[in-house]
Image 1: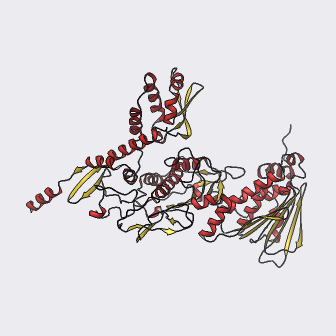
Image 2: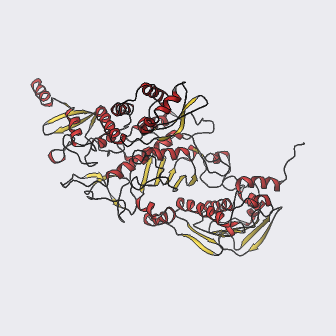
Image 3: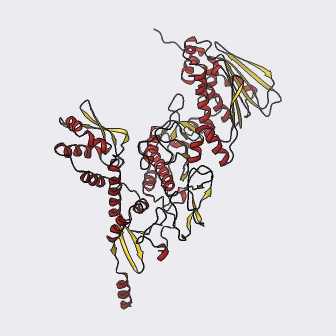
Length: 627
C-alpha cells in the first residue's frame, strides 16, 4: 500500500481524537484560550451536556479580523515563536491544534473583536467544509466560540458519549478545577438555560475561602491548613486537609504547576508521606499550587497536557514534603493549652484568617498566643511559614536547564541546595542562638510545655546546651532521638502499625522458604505494617511502617524474615529493632526537641539525667589564674 499524505480534514479529525475526547475537553481548550487572552470573565453555556451546544464568551483581548481564518487552521498559534519559547511555557495552550480539531468534528462559529476595531467579525467552519467564511458581526470586545452538534459527522465517536448528566458532571468537575487555580476570574456556567455555577472573583483570602467551600465543601474550607512556602525559585501555596479532620480517602486532590492542573504520582506520594506521622493510611485532601522556573518543567509530555515532567523530580518531591511536614507540625502544636504563667515573647506572629492555618516567620515580637485553639472555630489564628527567612538560608538557586542538558544530571548548585533543603531546621526561628532563659523560662532541665518551649542552642550539631541555675550541661541529641522513637513505637505497636505504600515496590530474589515464613508469621507482619508478596521468583515489598522507609529494604526485610523463621520474637525485641532502624529518622534537632517534650515527665527526667555537666566554673578559675 502506497504512502500518501493525509488530507487536511482527515488529519484534523485524527488530531481531534487526542484533543476532543468529550464535551468537557472542548470547554477545557476554549476556556484556556480565553484565559491566555487575558479575560477576567468567562461565561459558559451548554445544552444537553454539551453535545448539542457549547458556547464560551469572554472579555479578553480578541482576535483581529486578518487572523480569524488562520486561527482555525492547524498548528497556528500566537503563543510560541521559537523553540526557546517551547522550553519555557507559561500559557495554557501552545500547540495550535484546538480550534482546528474542534471545527473538524462540529459546526464552529468564532466571533471576536479587538479594542482597535470598530466592529466585530465572525468566522464559520463546519465539519467536512474546511473553508472558513468571515462575515461582519455585532459583539463587544472579546470573543465568543460556539460549537454546535459535537461529533455530528463522526457517528462512531458520538455513540461513545455518555448521558447528558454524566457529561455535565465532567464539565462541572473541570470548571471547579480551573476556578480553584484562577481566583481572579469570574466564571459562570449555564446548562439548558439555567445558571448552575456562579464563581465570583475571589480577590481577598476570605472570598477565596468561600470559593473553596463552594468547590471542596464547607468542612474542608473550615479545617484546612494554609500552606505558604518559598525557597529560591520554588514557591508552594494552597491548602491541606488538617490531620485532625482527615479520614480515609478524599476526592479533593488538586495539584497545579504554574497554574496548570496536572496529575503527578510523586506529589501524591509526598502528601501521603507527610501525613503518615499524624494519620497513617489516609489519603488527605489538598489544593496545592507550585510555581517554579518554567525551564525546570516540561509540560509537553502528554497529548491532553494532564501530566508534566520535572527536570529534578526528587528535589521537588522533598521540597513539597518538607513544606507540608512543617505546616502539620505547627498545626499539632497549636491546639495545646498554653501554660498559666506569663510566656516570653516569641518571633512567630499569628494573624486571624478564617478556616486556614499557615506559618510565616516575622522579625517582630508577637503577643502571647491564645490559650486555646480550635481549627473548627469561625476565626482561627493563622500561621504562615516563609522558608526564605529560615534559620539556615538557602544559598543557591535552581539552575535553568538548556536544551542540551540532561535531566538526570543536576548542577552542583542544585545538589547543594537539595542537601540544604533536607537539613534545614525549619521549626527554629532565625535567631536560634537565643539567650539562655532563667527560672521562669528555663531550657531543658525543667518540664517544657508541649510545643511551647524554645529549643536550646545546638553545639557541634550533636548536643543541646542546657542551663539550670548555675549548671551548664550537654544532652546528646542522638540518645534522645532513639528514646523518642522507642517510646513512640511502643505506644503504637500494641494496636499494630499502619504500613505506607511504597512509590516504587522493592523486588528481591526470593529464597525457597520465604513463602512458608510469610504464611506462618502473617500476624506479626501485619502488626508491623509490612505487606509482602511473592511473584515470578521475586519477593515484592509493597508496604512498610514509616520507621523503615529510610532503610535499605532489600537488606533488612530478608534479615527480618530469617530472624522470625525459627522463633517468634517478643514485642520488646521487635520494638527495639524498629527503633534501631529508625535511628536517623529525625532530620533536624528541632524535630527531636519537639518530640522530647511530648514524652512523659519520668522519661524526660531519665534522659535529662544522662546529660554531661560542664565544669565551666573551673575553666573560669583556671583562665583567671593564667592572667
